[in-house]
Image 1 (cartoon, rainbow, N blue to C red):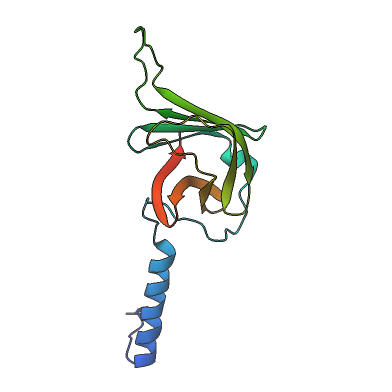
Image 2: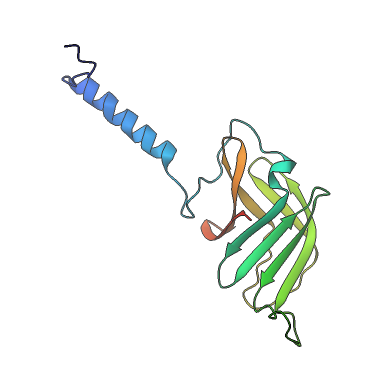
Length: 152
């Protein structure tokens, strides 16, 4: 009977196997938000990979719409008015602006800034890239992950 298993008998082979296990583990590790963050990708993401709707949920749902003309809308759905109900305030804070894609992030410039306690207006979102595709957007405050957005 032929056995394809390699027996780890020498200390050098054991160290090599341990190093391989460590490398595989590090490559497979994810950021706090559950998707790999930053790092050089084999292929840089393109504009089409970012355009569309992205959403995340912190204190309330937040939606980003990145358009091909390099503009964006950010909706903080603080307390949306229910359908068929008349409300004094829509319950949605909207911010608009333009964006540009760089190697590991999308940089944001606001046309206007509407505020409300807890509403953030980040100047950039970090790209979480897997295999050259944008898998998520990460909003950070320094090194702390604030919120993760996924394609809607």
